[in-house]
Image 1: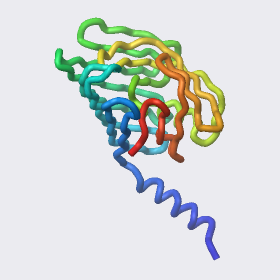
Image 2 (image 1 turned 120 degrees about the vertical axis):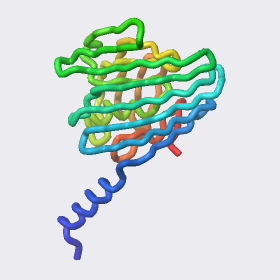
Image 3 (image 1 turned 135 degrees about the horizontal axis):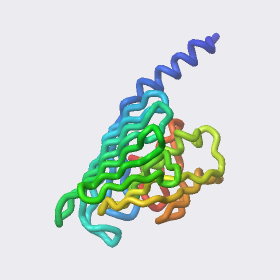
Image 4 (image 1 turned 180 degrees about the vertical axis):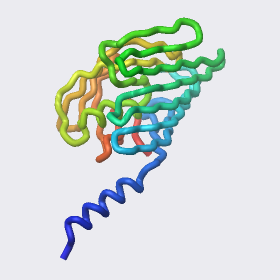
Length: 203
């Protein structure tokens, strides 16, 4: 006869033992991969990742590395991004203070903005960053239609702008409408992307 309390404890231990973890995605139709080491404690995420892209119609050859830290509610606290191209290197630092103000620093023109009340950063070409609003809003357990303002970062030039993503539930997963695409994603039980149609799949 099973003991529900022991089963719950075992399931909790199994979940906790899965972290930290390294998650890797391969692009569907482009020479590009992303790999990230994720530390997960409750809703707090600490991540260090890299995206490697070969030259194609979408982008020149580049590599990008990032470090992300959220608070205990899953709200982004800071993100640093660095890219390397044949033409040179670029970097940007994005941080959010307790009053909801974002500071974007790229070494030349610092920018301070609320970015429409954004609590998350999204990076184009990266399936990982969709996890931030999905987990923060509990969409991996109870999906609903919702519009999410984000600090939107383009690769590989690291330009930053205010944007909005729309998430809605569907029979094929969660539908995502972003400034550059309209697609569907499937996620694992922790809210991390398994497959982002047209972008990348986890391997």
